[in-house]
Amino acid sequence: MEKRSRILLCVCGGIAAYKAIDLASQLFKAGYEIRTVLTENALKFVSPINFAAITHNSVHSSLWEDSDPIPHISLADWADLIVVAPASANTMAKAAQGLADNLLSSILLAHRKAVLWVPAMNVNMYLSTALQSNLLALRNRGHYILEPATGMLACAYEGKGKFPPVPEIIYAIRSYLTQTRDLVGKKVMVTAGASVEAIDPMRIITNRSSGKMGLSLARALSLRGAEVTLIYSSISEELPYYLTEAVQALSAQDMYQAVISRAQSMEWIIMCAAVADYTPKIVAEQKLKKGSQMSLEMVATQDILAELAKRKSSKQLLIGFAAETQDIIANATEKLDKKNLDLIIANHIKNAGKDSNAITLISKSGKPQNIEGDKFDLAQQIIDRIVEL
Image 1 (tube, rainbow, N blue to C red):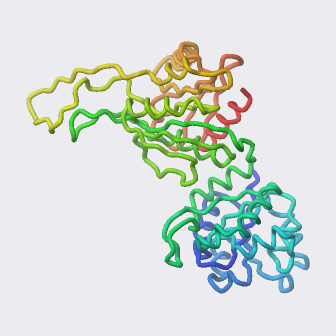
Image 2: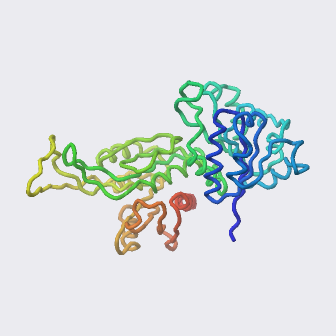
Image 3: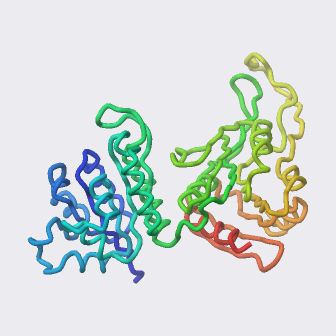
């Protein structure tokens, strides 16, 4: 039986503490073993029984009133990853200064593995010089910070400070259990989604791509520290909120302009979007009326990948995708050579829109590599392969 990763979920005092209950629930459903630590202030917002019932495991809140005589050492040793969510300014200040005056701060001082901090608080508190200095100190020690989302806060302020969407926290946990922030400073452009070509103001031509693979790549790259620019067409999911830049480019022409104008400054370019090869020659200004038949004259779109290949510098890596229905390896290999790519990812079109896939990584040297899994895991393995290049 495969060992389950052990998550020590530490909850600080703050209005977002109740959202940690859903986080614990989702982690348990995902198959993690979870124990919970609540600070004294967290107990004012949530009850230990909430977490005990959801995680089917122990909840701890005191150095002195625990069945374990040394809970701060036992829990620190037990955890594969400590997740502090929500993380308060007070607890982060203690950790940055090495204080150990309660159970959580003592655990953090004794722990020798990764810690993931998920701050949530008033925008002015979050942006304060003191807190940012403490976050920098934690980062410099190898801790991970999942920055808060932006929006309307419980205090009625608007700005950066919201507890992140629970799925994004879980993606961060998945990443930091196996990966590090090894791509800090790397400039990467990713394209995603299905292009949309207009026939008239109502009708369009598009394809079956959901954009899930491109979003998974953008998410995994960002969590590993890269500065990610996402150029996206039609997609089926919410964007990760922490991308460096996200630009919608619905048509093939829009995608061409958005990509080419940014390409020169990028170190990696990953063309995952399903861009139309053809577009209507004329777009009707008014909605076309129903008739017995309709005829569309189509013209070829500009080949973005071919143009990137022409402009590629010696310091750039260019990665493409090939969705095929037959002769998958042969067709992808031909595209790899023709477009001067460093890596191509081939897959069968039948998996378009699904959460998992089976893909083949093909480079100019080495045997094709077959891998399968959910798209976030595949994204991590694709990134690992690009790093090798």
